[in-house]
Length: 141
Image (cartoon, helix red, strand yellow):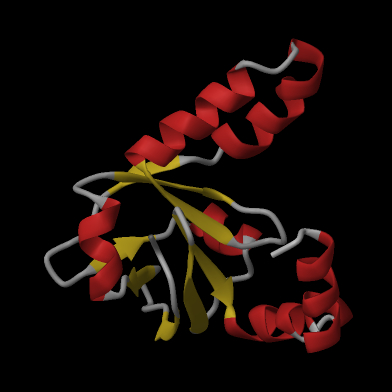
């Protein structure tokens, strides 16, 4: 399980350091793809395969756009000897990744966000303590 929030920097070649506690769980190779809310999502191979299978099980009319969105920019990657992963220029542009970024654990995947975008996202009204408590109550958590 991926958990935690880590402030990182993107180097001039588009590489980001992956927190050491994430590296082993990601495995030797993993998939970097577009995430929702304009972030980059990293899937361990097993999660990427599960995600593909869920999409493939949907009717063609519903899955075509989703497949195009997620698969067109997806890239198989691995961590280099210094614990970094390369994020392609197109993926960096999609997620507005500049120098200051945040790497977060999201249960079975990892996300990379522009730091300012992440802070704005987390300051949305639906993430207030009251809103979270209300959602948890609705879900009976």
